[in-house]
Image (cartoon, rainbow, N blue to C red; front, top):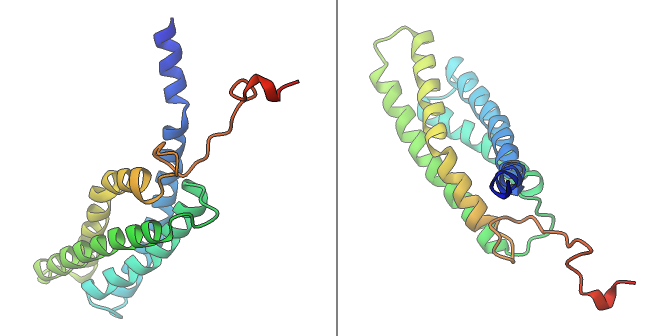
Amino acid sequence: MRGVTDLIRRLLGRLPRVFTRYTAASVAAGVASEAVLLTAYGIHLLTPGQASAAGWASGALVNYGLNRWWVFRHREQSRPVRETLGFWLTSLAALGLSTWATGLAGRLAAPLDHGLRVAVVGAVFLGVYASLFVAKFAFFNYFVFAGNSGSGSGLRRRRSRHQVPTTTRE
């Protein structure tokens, strides 16, 4: 019976809640990125690579804010260099990969109809970010937004009254 209770506790624990919020934040950032990419490239405003960079910028801003304040619950900057530099370096690596991949997709899809070419570029853009999804979560959770306690997240665990020394309880 203890094994079942431990499993339930883990399933309802901190990590699944953080991962669920991370997923929702990533979807919101992905929607913002994809909307900017498809709009800028679809109306011939930017090339695939440029549209990818514009999409990245809009999504990265949404993603940073949501990850910092909602997903990992950081209100103050306890480790500003680790947090800011780690997040933006990871995001810049994703930018480089997505820009390269969408530029290549745009060149390879050049003979296709414009609507189909936009769809191919958009699919490649989403594919790059989907492939980086879990790796970025692990990096953010265990390094960038890791709390001082080393628990693997910026969330601070509250002490229950049973964890407080008995000399302080009445």
